[in-house]
Amino acid sequence: MNDLTAKSFLFRFLIFSLFLLSCSGTRNTLEEIEKNLSQIMDKAGPSIVFISAKNKDLGLEKYGVGVILDQEHILTLENILSNVDQVTVTLQSGEVIEDSEIKEILCDFETDVSLLRIQKKDLKPVRIAEKIQSGNLGIVLGNTRYSKGLQASLVTVGNSWIGGMDGYDKNLLLLNIPCSIYYCGTPVFNNRGELMGLIEGKVEGEKNMVLLLPATTCKEIGKILKKNGEVKRGWIGIHSEIEEDFEGEAGVLITKVFEKSPASRAGLKEGDLIINCQGSRIKSKLELKRMISRLSRGSEADFTLIRNGKRLQKKVVVQEAEEIPIKRRCADKSI
Image 1 (cartoon, rainbow, N blue to C red):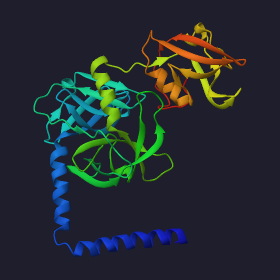
Image 2 (image 1 turned 45 degrees about the vertical axis):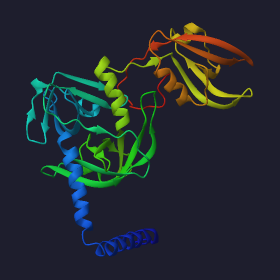
Image 3 (image 1 turned 120 degrees about the horizontal axis):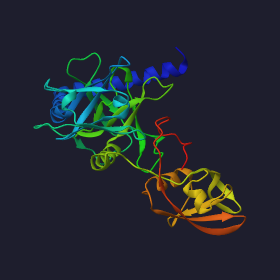
Image 4 (image 1 turned 30 degrees about the horizontal axis):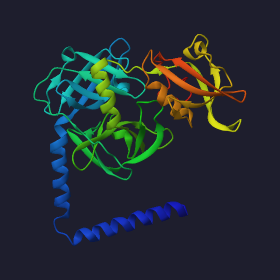
């Protein structure tokens, strides 16, 4: 055991000892914890479902978890439902919703949000947490590979820099928990039984670092999927990079303009520096991408450019972006 490991062990042992000492002075501490946890499970448990998804031709079988969003929709992850042709959903009561009862599968690849449209009565919808702060405690609650019924774990929820690559995607949250025991789509709740997010998967190279898709992202994308069946994003056809100081100005430098793209038709050129879009100062590539992705097809994007030291005004008619189902949340995708 090295010094760092030893110090870490001693620190955890000290904290655990202090916890036990504090508990010994309060007879009903554990009973209160169990009571509170039981109340949260009673509130949130009925809204949790187990999902089995298969591709019969490929012999593929995937398992996941989701939550009841409303009386007609189950919220889960796109990576569970992609490339499958048979889905069944099991409620906590043991009742099974067969594949024939699922009316439609709605997915958004970029944010990993998916909905199953069903027709069922007497379902208990989940409640969404509108605000999550780094350091909030969360309760992971779901069916695991080894448990019969629901399993619960207490975690701390933190922020990350991962995600947020377009106008609809918010940065993912972080949990420190052994991911292998929980299925993708497993929900995390706050102390009021409100949904904080769905477990998406673990961070590559990190044993117990798990990514959490925020419930606020799920809520927004869910509304769009229910209304339109898909999430459409704007596109003008450029690659760019951030330029902190170019010809005395900060902005986003165009490194490539696609042929026959909206940007090309509007006269944008490689080497142009975008300093303003829609009346807002552009300070980063991500900021520009988020702004363009939220514009609808046929709308105009107003740009202020610097070319050869001169300011230019350009209007670009936005086109709908094609969905490319590779590299989810890829920062290198064109704008």
